[in-house]
Amino acid sequence: MRRLLLLPCLALGLQAQAPVLSVIRQPRATLGEFTMPFAEFDVKSDGDVVRFHVGAGIGVRRWNGGDTAVRVIGDANAFINDVFVSAAVVTEFPSGESAFVGPRLRVGWAFTPHMAISLEGEHLERPFGDGLSPRRRSSLGLAYTVRF
Image (cartoon, rainbow, N blue to C red; front, side, top):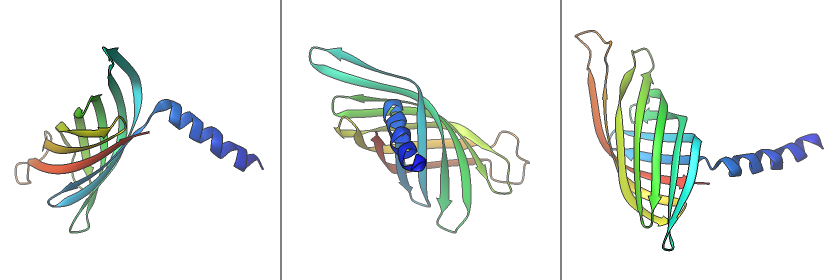
């Protein structure tokens, strides 16, 4: 019985925090990301509402070849009327390799105040890798973002 009572309480806590979940498809990989807010606020002006989210989270990238990488994300995004804008700092840890670090930008269409489809561009570099391995990863993708 305690477990049954605990689950709705956890769901209410997550709803109050308004986590953001994103699923991204890039040409050579599929990604999933989950961020929780540090700060979240709404700004109202003349009937328009802008929703800001600043948070941190984790993610996973699965390459088409089967390799995976864990990601740590610091994210700031805004739902501005019908526009979705996001900027983030991403650190990616591929299995058996050193970390990649870099920025990510998203711009797209918010078709509800809680859902958006956006074009994503990221550029990751390996600052501490040796000279023989690839040092850069840049990619474009299509992201579906949901704010709970």
